[in-house]
Image (cartoon, rainbow, N blue to C red; front, side, top):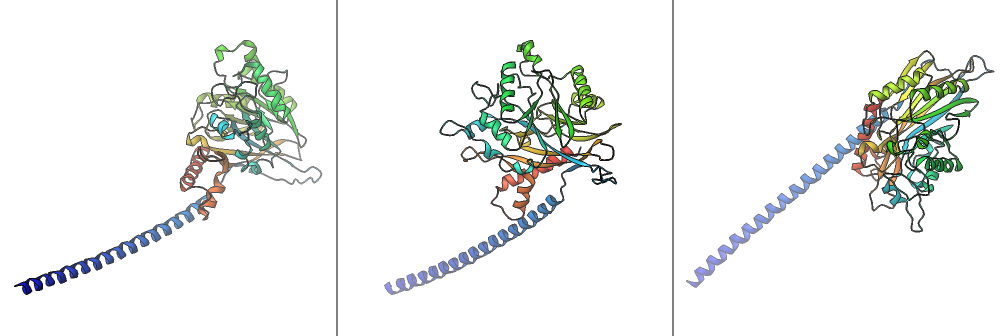
Length: 417
């Protein structure tokens, strides 16, 4: 009986071993099949990603940043003694220094460094004859502040100047955060480091006329109003170019009599609105009717449409909002910016200055995160996106790449109104 039990046990063990081996083989086969399936899926997805990037690269190559080109354009005239002259003007939007930027730029020795924020895009603006911007912060002896009453380290102003901007409007809703004395202190510092300024009425002349390649270009600037306006003194309010039709008409008359071409920088519109308000359109029409050739808007903190107005004097151009040049606003549409490029042509045959071409370079305020050594930096949206789509996927994260694509799409939709 004992032998029979041993035989039974031996038989059961053989069956168990066989089942275990069979199960092991099945598991191995299943595992191999799963691995093969995963590899196939990964390869398929990688191939699809490559195809998608190639398609996106092709679309990026097709995207054109040109807004306007003169239809009858002839750089060389029939009279060789009087060649046409080209003037290149670039413009950026509001220049802000938020609290997060202050923290990022602060150094251990209690100084500030901001130049790295602009280093990627200086080449896009330094080739222009003049570069315009709107300085929406003060430079006074008061404590630094990125919000509320805005006041920045002098190093910030110098970094903006080093980036290529050389004429700034100081007419914004924050210009009187520290009253007329703060506006004067700010203007004096900006001029001390080489900026031309426009937008105040601290002196008799509120029109800035620049002689560029023997072409006189007038620059005017106005704001819709200021923060806490009711608390400001009459002296404060009279120190700034707050828009009203009477003053603007007088300034434009003076500009027409003394210059060949007129730019007006307007601080107007509604925060974060990608379409102009009725009031913006009304003011634009008024300015054009009174001689403005180019109107450059800011304040909404996002890009707004651009359009050409045909007048008896030729084409007038309106950019309702250029967004911000740089800021730490954590709103995706506010990170989508541009450098606007305007080409003027002084005709050799009659000396008239006309709008020849308008295009733009898309830029983006990249936030690398609080722990990054350099948190904020401006980047060339299209250039970086094309490099990523071309295979350099280490240049930015995939999430950032997708944001760049979304930003380029937003620009195309808004500007192409």
